Image (cartoon, helix red, strand yellow):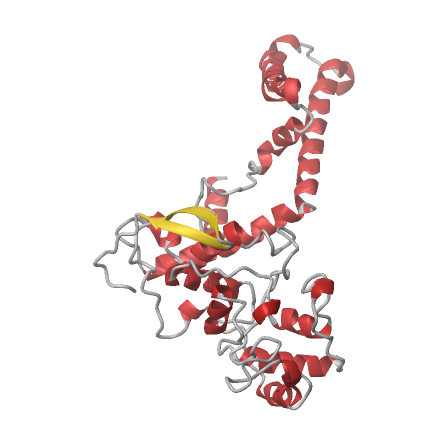
Length: 366
């Protein structure tokens, strides 16, 4: 038996490592599978009956199992001769299996639980990748807290989800950020900008009435402006370039600085790191929406916070390269700062993050 367990652990690479624990998060905790029946039982014992599910029923079950050998003294091995006790044990097992099955079913159909599992897997992979580069003097926790993606996600959840939905959670005033910046997201925007996922009925951009393949070509060209597109298709880029620059797009959208005062956002460097930073700081700039803008500017962000937010936005797409992982490029604050403590303040329509306890170290950035 021990050999089987040891072999199973070795085959699976040891104990499972998930994302670092964050006491301040809204994590939907779940017990291990062998305690799921108790977790499910509590759903039926709310309010004044909570003590029934937490104390009375478990205690009675333990007492029954403890005294069972002393009261079930029938020497017969046939269940038909021991119906009362056999029925009690069998009913208990059926209840445990049923409650466990119900709990598993509910979790498997709960979109929030499933998204949480996906996020945990991504965070765990990210933490292990960072740990492979070295552990900072402040300890293992700071390696994750100083990661721009982690900080960016924290900023997004505290300051952006009020208007932007992500994986089913968040507001609906702005575009849905699920798969933001991916080929799927951009092509969907071109096809139907007034879709509920994008600008809804308030959008003034007309749909691009071209075949699907042409939309993919335009998408490839637009995303190639960012400089961090994965698996670029050069043929599509050239075809998309002609469709964008020689089509109706340039009637509203400028390219470069010469037509900066057109009515729609400048598409030069579209969704690149620089483009996103400028847009987040001041979406009302003439380069973007001008007087028609409805989004507040976040000009109170420090460069570190803005960089972290953009890094996180890039991770929402599988089609983009994370800027801090480009060859030869490192973020100076990855291991150079102690764990940030943040508090939020909404002032003048801007989201402010006040950083405290950010002391630089002499450790060379990796």
